[in-house]
Image 1 (cartoon, rainbow, N blue to C red):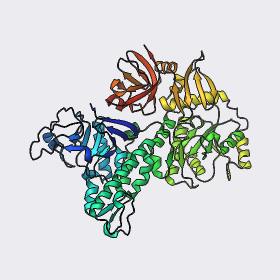
Image 2: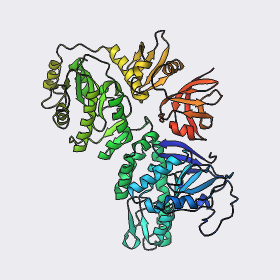
Image 3: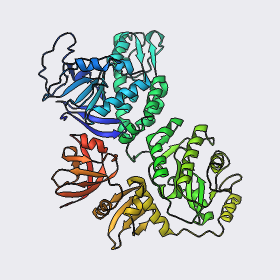
Image 4: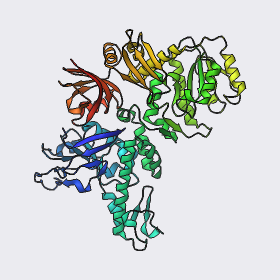
Length: 584
């Protein structure tokens, strides 16, 4: 277990943490001033270090370069003792394991940083082998240009070795690139080292500048993690070097690694500025849940496909109000959008459906069309509509609908010739729905609560947990009540999530719906459940998930602040913010 490192805030694999030394260090950070290396044992056996709480002591080690045979690593692996001071051990992806240390130094980093797939494999394999609440340290590789990608991948500690060497070589580093001192006409930086003329700026000053800009970039990255916006930054920052672009795209292919660590909702907007955004966990997760968990409950009504709107949630936009006025709620409305795919009206509040912003040009790329078409096809294959009314613009949207119409056994009707909000188009929409029954408010509200339960809890959860409910409140502030009028849960408009009461948690546990459980020791939680008190947790718990907390003495419900696997692993930190609890 670790006593000296704790992750406080998470943004996918990136964390803002605390290295608890005599003077605390906020990570991700430079480790140069707080690391004491006890030395390599390749040439001689090193004395057992005394250590103290002012430094992170790297225990005597044998590092292995990338590509070293597994049998060689096993034969020469050092024995790491248990120590009572902050410690780090040196591991390779093949030798990484829980050695009881507070940090793990990944050997051979200069050999794989610079190669996208090798970097991905090394970090993912090592992270899987070491405890979640320990720091991952990569030495000799960080630069202002790549450190955001390193942290995005899951690295907590770096050093200034590479930027110092570059400085002594007369290489002036920035977050976008590197320049030879001889080529600079002016100093494009305002750090302390650069407060002089370019003529007097020497290599010693260059070293100081390089370290300053690396330190500043780490501070910027920490801020981005706290804001939940690191991915947005990395998408832009990675464009400055080919390997960084390759690296974060390689991590996009590691969906399981990132998805486990990505919150189910965030406070800030999700920015979709490039086609890489289509591969973000939040986008892929939404599409996956809509096409595998969502159940259409407004039976007997046709599907009405409409374009998305800039205003969120969609139902508050002027265009969608016009669509509903023309349709008179005689069809089930689903919005088509890039980057998300399709959004049933019941899920318009659910992250990121009302929290995204995208670049609107009026032109769809081939990749966008392929993605939305794939999601729409899967959605139609899972649902059962008698027909589809496609009230969409000719550009982009209609291409997608025509492609899907040729692939599914559901007839499509198109009601727009020029623009969806013209009087002619709205008249065509109204005429296409002549004779259809109206969907009543009570039907829509019950369907919304059940669809949100499916989305967050699992396929079929809505019918299991919210069978025979009454709905109270006005959309979007809806509450689910049982037959006796006791509240079970409330819809949280900000995220489109659910907030359970104890009665709702009881019903959830007693149902056949998948239950996200946290098993605790014999205490009654008040306010928060700390990781040391957790015995086990469901693997499918994600940050932000609603969870049931159970132990010998207590039953509670609350919201997860770390993933389930981390809860079961961690020895420090808040795991669950408890909303309601009772003593057994």
